[in-house]
Length: 319
Ligand code: GDP
Ligand code: CA
Image (cartoon, rainbow, N blue to C red; front, top):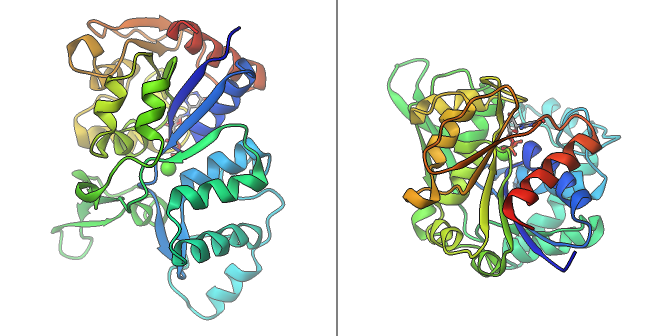
């Protein structure tokens, strides 16, 4: 195989797992990951980048596999001490090991380094085997419009508050990317699309992971301008999410919770949408006009299954 450049758009858990498969399926390839930073938030004075850390820890061998986020072998002494002070927010867990990452990130950001440079510095330790690019160096924070429990009036809250504290229970009516108008693609992002031999949309949340990345001005155009084929992998199998609560996000945008619904939402590249190829599970039907729909096993429940899925995506991209 000659040297190929693969670009993957990814959120946290689904994206990170898929990337392990891409790395295994194409060990010689250059892999660049454009990661969602819309979940980012500041708590206890620390800058938290959940999806970047999930990808970095997963590929670097530091992830807690069971939980899917944070560090393996974690302890929670600082969290308990903060709770003893009644320090808000008590609902967000940062483990003791994980705190070191956040102290370094915050210190570097405060010193004026952009998030992209901080991400590269943190990855020096973890050696994820891929180039990690935040979608943007500017702050873009996803907010969710939900009814206020007391007044019933619609109000926007940070995505993390809805997702973690409220367990995504209140019905969202909209997702808003605060700060997106002033955001630019992160350094290297548009260049990566231009140089790509394959572009893959990981089986990540179509709304608050992939959708957020595509909302950054310039990214969608750069993606569509890529000479590579664009292959998407459905995060929905048999009409349900595999893990997590993405099914709470799709209806707010009028997207049916099915492989077909998400495929149609992404749309055919030949028709102003994104996809050349859409991978769905063997038992799922998806009629997406203008898109080459292929059925392949989509469950990433072993390293082999995950690598086979990535190989199918790369085959579809022609690399
Ligand atoms: P988050 O940022 O941690 O929410 O993670 P992502 O946005 O990257 O991925 C979340 C999505 O991954 C969910 O919609 C899941 O359905 C999907 N997912 C998780 N495991 C699998 C799997 O084994 N196969 C597929 N196809 N999707 C998966
Ligand atoms: Ca996320």
